[in-house]
Image 1 (tube, rainbow, N blue to C red):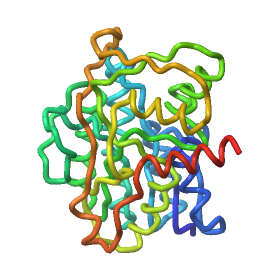
Image 2 (image 1 turned 120 degrees about the vertical axis):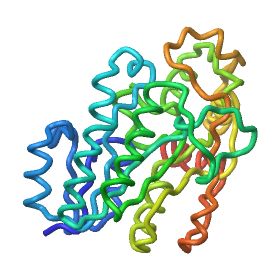
Image 3 (image 1 turned 180 degrees about the vertical axis):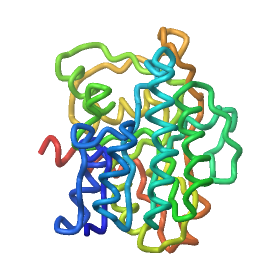
Amino acid sequence: MPHFVVLGAGGQLGSELVSLLPKEDTVALTHEDLDITDFSKVQATLTVLRPHTVFNCAAFVRVDDAEERVEEAWKVNAFAVLFLAKVCAELGATLVHISTDYVFDGRKKSPYTELDPPNPLNVYGATKLMSEFFVRAYNPRHFIIRTAGLYGRKGSKAKGGSFVERILNKAKTGELLKVVTDQVTSPTYARDLASHLVKLVETEKFGLYHIANRGYCSWHEFASAIVQLAGLNAQVEPITSDQIPLKAKRPSFSALISVRLLSAGLPPLRHWREALAEFLAEKLG
């Protein structure tokens, strides 16, 4: 029987986990392999595999689409997770569930910790917060991981690539980049997050953790750093959120910091700019 199962293995975080976990002891399941909303198939698959740990990296991540495709977003992000938590509990399996900084409303002006009360502003954030409640309620062997501004080598298929990839592609064509200055996040390299997850599950110190690259910046500052570190000559124009017709309201400040990682024996992740520099050096070098 495999020790690990990765759901959503084709995504930017799932693919990094698969690359770090022992190949002979890991089953990687993409959306095509297993749709987590197919409850009977989820139960049958996990019952046969009987893994020790399940990483759930599958999610409906299109924040604006969730405002219109409400039922689908709730089914994927919340109710499928409820069922998954129950199945894992029945099998005695640990569930590692990925959540988001969008469970917060952005009114705080310093990074959010695991102790801060959530208050989502949009459907996506609400579905992810409910998924946290379900995991906590139905499987005591759980890790709930909130992260932010995720990017990786694989990119997000649902979003047409990661933010970094989209900025690079536009900058290379000479297109004027317009990026918001009034939304602040903690950009996080998927490989760094995956590496910490692999170490964290070994501790069995279950609970809620914030894991994001250290520091924070506006999306405009992030885009400017991408262009600069990539050595591209592109203009990044600062704009505000009200200049973009988005369906979902975003928190103005959703940077994350952890007050729990050290108690699990893990240090904070490196600074976001250092992680970005390494990512770009590998991607462009």
